[in-house]
Amino acid sequence: MCELLGMNTRQPAAITFSFRGFAKRGGETGHHRDGWGIAFYEETGCRVFLDDLPACSSPLAAWVQNYPIKSRIVMAHIRKATQGAAGLANCHPFQREWQRKAWTFIHNGNLTGYAPLLDGTYRPIGQTDSELAFCALLQHLRERFPNDGMPDAIELAQAIHEAATGIAHFGNFNFLLSQGDLLFAYCTSKLHFVQRRAPFDRAQLVDEDVSIDLREINDHDDCMAIVATAPLTRNESWQKFEAGTLKLFEAGELRWQSSVKPVPYFAPAVDPSQ
View 1: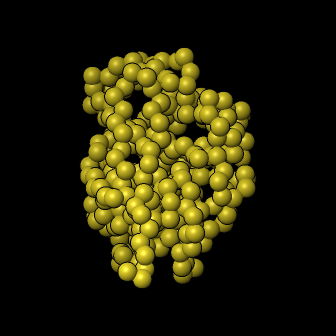
View 2: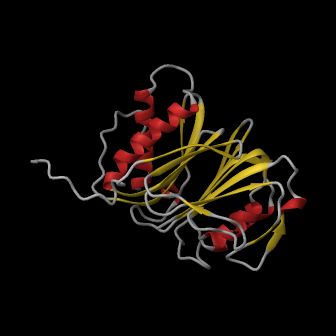
View 3: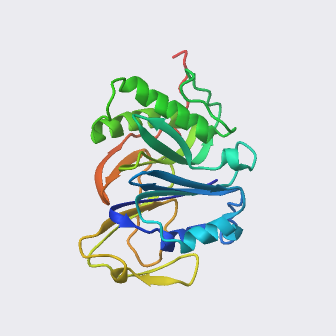
């Protein structure tokens, strides 16, 4: 399956160090060779870069590793295809508009027999279960909040968790979702996060013999949360998500979380005749 990476910060920051180790997993230290993508939110909008080459050998990925785009929200994805062929149309992040915001979505997992009824507002371009779920998720939010104007962050998180729990009945559904200010992270099987704040220390990558002194690139009042499928550094206190949990990050802090158990993906099938 795929791997996910997300960053949410108080002050705009570059993700070059974390992305360097993450990109190695796209075909070198991992088997995710079916494309990659990354989204950077900035004040004027969202930059999305996609490539159907493995991240470990992509010239575009190499450029991203060395170009310090500063952002408060970054989401990156390396793909191991389960549904849909390798190609740009099936590379994450996927992007759609709602409430005058660019929403982006990345997914790890496999949904079986998932066929939501879409009203045509959002339709998938590629053939992945991931993009289909994203379209259904945004349709759910439009229906839940029909008025103009962005809902409260906690209300949004609750509605997203409700929709995610329903989709998780069809399979493994780990995802990251953002509209530029908030980072929503949902786990059914495997997701981790680390909180970075002063006093900063040196961080050592898992996938490469490279380290960085975080004190040199962060101010005393900086704060950030990094979310990844598997820990990216050896010497930081990564925390594992409990299955069925949605976490909301804002300004580099964990603001809210909620869990539903048993996780639908792992729950036994319900006989409709009973």
